[in-house]
Length: 162
Image (cartoon, rainbow, N blue to C red; front, side, top):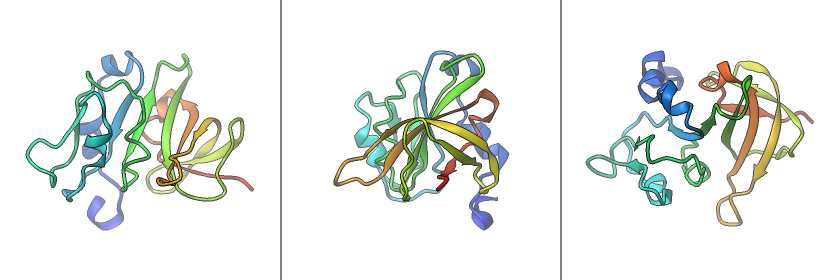
């Protein structure tokens, strides 16, 4: 339960999961922001207007999956590291997941990393495809990795092998 262990419930996850039809259209952002706090960098980052706060800055961000193209600009700008991108069209067996990452060492493309779920449990070792820096002001990286299709809504962090 989110309030006691930081892990959202299955019901919370179902509410934010795009439809299979939307997943079939290409990359889409998913926001796992479940607490009402005054924050809106994701709204300002989205040039397509796909992220909104329905009433005010304290609302939980809502994504319009039909407007989102999965560009990932919002991923590194979210201070809560609550946004990720899923592309289930990457290949038949594998999906591309883009995650925010703020630790060292930073992985490199072609490197295999240990993939973790929301509770920190190991899901397996998978390949990093791309690493994008957030820039000098924003030190959050966006890590793109390939994972089996069935894990896209489980993967939330990585552990770099040294």
